[in-house]
Length: 603
Ligand code: ADP
Ligand code: MG
Image (cartoon, rainbow, N blue to C red; front, side, top):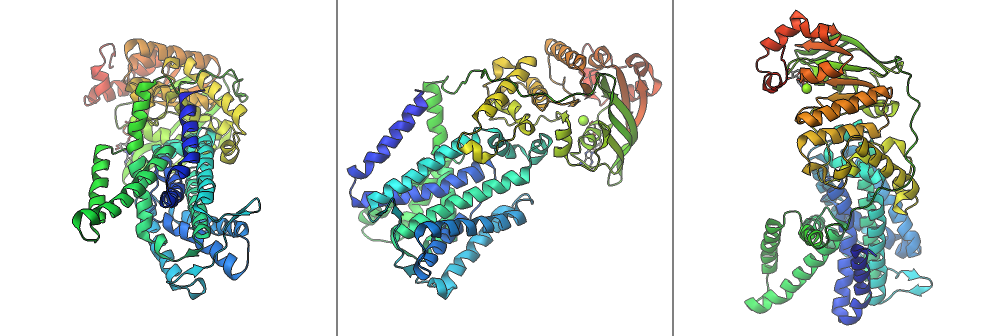
């Protein structure tokens, strides 16, 4: 048994005996902590995993509570049918809200959740059919296996059972193909989409899941209390949920448990203690509490759980290092035969306002060929890459990939066809392991959904994805770094991780934007060997490179660009001697690589 499992088992045992060790007051408090934890777990998904902020979770809690309360009191439904109806309603509301807000970036989502939280709260207080400000009472208790739950102790086991179920399923979900895609949202949509991840879909899933957990919490609350009124579903409460998550550690499921426990206990303790100390009651506890929270955040900006985790890592550093699974690697696609035309760029033009970054560029790349794109900084090479991989739209011209016009497709569709790329400015998920970063590349090669992974029905496929990621790491000489956080590697090696991730997509065409930048001499030689070997296996490779030595030894053909124009094309030796190229490179004295490289002959 791993130490992690021992700790989890210990926590479960503690939860089971705790209500017997505290009084009735403590039991009620425990129930409330559990209810808050359920909401905060949703925020861990939404904010910690997806990087999306919501202040409006209390509104979803209220919808869960009110929907079931109304159906059970006014319509005589059973609480379980009430839960189902509440979940359907909350899901629809979250889908509509998500559809409107999630495709926009920046502050749009947080602001709209504020508006949403405010308006739903007003609805609760002003609709007479659900009791207005007085609310509703006489809500039936929940029955489990024929037993009507009536005590805080009975609800304790139901509520904390739900907490544990959510922790377990979410943990499984995050440790899977679609879970990695969810975690990739934080790296920005550009990279994730280029790996075939539908970022809008995953943002929506996270938003809906968080709303559903809030709904379940509200449902439990309403039936446990037997009455509801609008107060606990205010915007202020929504902000408190977010606070609990941040204090505990929004990046971790156990951070949710820690945050809501600590927050609730501290608040309760201050409410009891301060009036005694000051000899009068008032809202001093709010003030002291606020200051305390700010202090905690200042000491542990990533939440308290991050501290616990760091302690655990020091105590048992090798706890999480899984060995390479022995599962078979994923099947590879049929690739074009060597010499077959893979990529055709015809008259591609890209304008940024008045600036013509690419002017009617044409060239071709064949399977089993390395084509190098050279040119000084600002020549338009990265722009061309973006337009080929459909990360950006060309203003005019045509891109054909494996005999299909792809310039109207999106980046995901192009990735699915077998074109993969790296980025000039490395786009890895710095906290995720090198292995997981590479496994993200295999996203489109699996099919199990997050629902299947939540219940661990995807394990065989996940093992194959991991084995494939290992295979690419070994191929690129990165196996020793598999478990290191990608951000801890030197920048040059991070570029190689990007190549491994691109290879994990099983591509026919690789687009590499300055792969050798930042590599040392020996590492460059290894990279050249790897690319040579990939070419031998029939891959088409298009690479942008500054180091002319590197290019001359490796490329089959070279295309040179300057100021958005193609100035030369041909065999490396020919292009190197081309007057326009010499002029571009000698004229481009602000071009750092060409002058800095000791072994690079700039002209
Ligand atoms: P290279 O990769 O060859 O160094 P780039 O393709 O990055 O060159 O840039 C080509 C030109 O296009 C530069 O003048 C750059 O400032 C401009 N450019 C690139 N991206 C944008 C953008 N998103 N908006 C406006 N101008 C851009
Ligand atoms: Mg560039």
